[in-house]
Image (cartoon, rainbow, N blue to C red; front, top):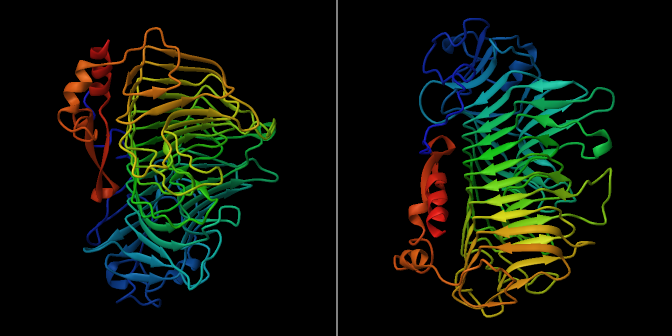
Length: 511
């Protein structure tokens, strides 16, 4: 089925478009207008002509179902927007823009932990707003937009749409508290609190440190209450040095059509980060995404199936030019239940990796950047129908291993690697150490390999792939027919992702 550029997930009934004048935004509720240039806090705020001036004026308002907060386009509001309200499925509370021109901008005062916070709320839409939180000094934990649920119960149907979040200077150090463009927090002491149907889409996150979009949630499996129906779709992440999208404590999260690129090499030595990956999640799907140029000192893969997760699926993604490689599959063997139930049943299929694993910077383990890294006692991993097109390494000392399966307080067991295409213009290596029950079946090994695994159905040449290489040996031109572009980030960019039908037909033709 041809993948369409338009979002198929219908939000027409819940997301309202920006208004350009005093049109009625909701059939029920009150519209509150703010204009940082021409408004006045002594006005009633009920029309564009009688708009309030400051965000502080909203502190006197208790929002009801169907209400809206409308910010004048082109205006800059210095302050913090805090929302604590409950809409309904048929009467959402909407924070949006009105008028013409650039999106209205909320810029947080110095030393602010966030510019916007939605706390203990339901059926809220925040859209078409620019957000900035730059302090004079870096502040650990600083974020642009925070969504918070604590001792509340289930926070339902929060939507972040078409936000431009940039220049958030949090800490570069993960253990110190980091920093992010979007921070999603749920926790509890007395009332179990989770999110249901949280959606983040069409947003642009630029120059946010350390991370772009990250969750903070309880992770121990003896008291694990996951958020459900999480969707992260069609977002652009740019000039972010750390982690891109990291769901935590979720069941069935869907991360698709997102782009992370141009990651600066600003994290200090020893800091680990990667593109898109779940932690303490089950049944996560990462699909139709693109990650490139990740330069973290450790890890720096495009994708990761991390520990305390089961049945993560990584499919139809495009990964290229990432220092650490294409994918990490890992489990901390020294961490045991209830904190960690392991890494079980990861599936990596129908992805394209081109010119990954190009780290020139030494790590604590010396030179290390395999295209695929399986670390620790991962169980029942399946890697099939992927194209791993390794380029010529930029320097002589750069790692030339296609797959490493090594120890993290234990080794992987029952890894099935089937029907993949491994291409290398230089000698590459498989290094499986003490991992057990590795099965290689029907893979293509195009190039020279050390320690090539026993694969009785393996093949050493492909006329089909050779014909593609005539279009360009680097892989980018050769594999262009398997890729397609989809508009994302409210029109800010195009993600290049794998065409599902094209890559499945490609592997059918190979057989």
